[in-house]
Length: 454
Image (cartoon, rainbow, N blue to C red; front, side):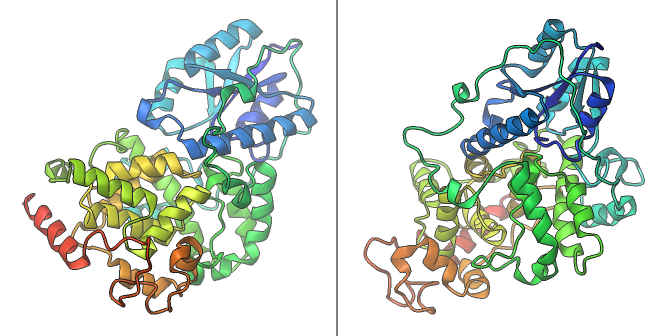
């Protein structure tokens, strides 16, 4: 029998439209392997919510492989060392993998050398091909989106192999439960299972139904009380479905561009990471290195209040409680809450980025960094710092009070008018905090701080 090929799985936990798997299966016996890589920088190790998702996604993938008379080998440690060891153990000649753009994985890919065969399939187009006239990655999304459309449609999805040949001898594997990915004491993930079913089968089921709803996306996507979005983001993040599978499922449907434009942000952020690998920790606009972010005991107290959804601003608190309970937060409210942290509380955007990283089931290094730097005004394609979202206006515009009533139940009995701003209506119930800071005071403080950079 031919020497086996290693299939190095990362955020591509699927069998459909999996070019790396198709190529490996064509070559001969395949050994699929997932490595819990503890070599990522400490602040970017997989967050708690992602670990919950990863456990269930790996379990689902293992079952799918078992039906193909294959196995999922689990190993833990530095990816390069583990893969080299597996090559020695199994006699594998090549390693096939999907190309990724996180800096620590690009370093690992480079270290593996010619033995590693990389495949595209995790983005709508090959990121390196969508560049400016100077051959550099785009720094402005609108220009990127225009250029990306010249590379669409993407290739048709690759069919799942009919068979996956097994090696003569399987290497040893860790046991998934031994990785302790699920929270135990305390188990804070109780609400996750009510909202999410990780795995490729669920992802494909959502893709099957989404084309019937996508035409209404542009109208409903900003309404947090409605199911107006696809809720595919964690499935896309873990690679349980490919973006091109999603793209081709939507072909022929009307009014898909607003949705596809949002999906294209994944491609854009990958290009940003190619140009600036440290974008998750370093300001895209370096003048903001001198920004006088608040620190000290009061700042820590305010950060905790924001994390716990106790700022006294109902729309912000609703979003932060949804995040903690379900591992996800509606995109409009995600922006409102992020803006509040940076501009109302004058706290470093990296504090919020780290919290989202730990709490979101769809936390993505590139998306998280680009979105936080956009809202903070510190990034390459950024909102101006002086553009400060007014939580009350946002709440009244996008929530008919149903969202706040769901996530801040102590306010459920208030009228539609009072629920957005209990303090202003002298309607704040006992136990709900007063506003942590007034909007005008916060705005003036933020603008004064920004003026110090001039």
